[in-house]
Image (tube, rainbow, N blue to C red; front, side):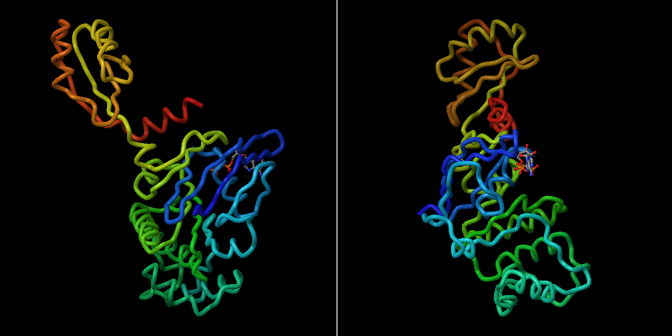
Length: 297
Ligand code: ATP
C-alpha cells in the first residue's frame, strides 16, 4: 500500500510556480528522500501534505484514502528546529510538547529511550550537544507512536557527529517499521539514508524511484593520448559506450554500470592506431549525476 500518493500537484504563489504537476508514490516501509536544491519546492510539497498549505490544483492521498485528520495523527513531523526551552530538561520540554500536540505524557519515557536520551533525560536542554538536541526533536515527533515520520532537512545546522547520529537514528527508526519521508538538498545524505528518491528541480519532478537505480547507474572511463581529436573520433564508434566527450586534455567515455572493460578499450584504441597514455575507470560521482539531472531542466 502506498503511504502517500501525490497526483499532479501544482502550487503557485502568485506568479511563482513552486510545483508544476508533481506525481509519485511513497511505498510503505521506505525512507523516501525528496531531493532538490534550494527553492525547488520541497518544503512547499511537505506543507501541502501536512495541510499547512493548499495546492493550487491536483490531489494526494494518505494511506490510500482521501486525507483526513485521523491520517495526520499517524504522521510525526519535524519541519524546522523546534523551540525547546534551554533551562528545562528533556522530560519537561517533552511534557510541554505532548500537551501542545495532544499526545499522552506517559509516552515520554518510551520516546526518550528510542532516541537514547534516557540517561540524560533530567539534564537541561542547554547542556545537550547538537546531535542530542536533534534527537530530542525526533523524540518529540515520536510522541503518540506515529507510523510515518516527515523530516525537512533533518541534519541542517548539525556538526559532523550530530549528522552521523541523526542519520543512524533515521535508519534505526526505519528498521523498526516507520516509513520516513525526508526533504534534503544533500545528494550524499539521500544516498546514505534513503531507499527511494524523488528529484525536484524548480518545481518539476525530474525522476523518482529506487535510489540504487536513480543515482548510480553509470561508469566513466577517462582516456588520454597525444592526439585527443583522433581518439575522440575513433571512440565515437566504440560499440559499448553510451556517449563520449572531450574534457580538457582527456576524453570521457560513459558506460552503463559494469560495462566498461578497460582491456577491450585499450586493444580497440591500439588497433585503430592510438596509443593511450592514460586509462582509468571511475564511478560517476553522484554529484555529477545530480548536476546533470538538474541541468537538463
Ligand atoms: P529550501 O530548501 O530553500 O527551503 P525548497 O526546495 O524547500 O527550498 P520551497 O521553500 O518550497 O523550496 O520554495 C519553492 C519556491 O516557492 C521558491 O521559488 C520560493 O521562493 C517560493 N516560495 C516559497 N514560499 C513562498 C511564499 N510564501 N510566497 C512566495 N513564494 C514562495
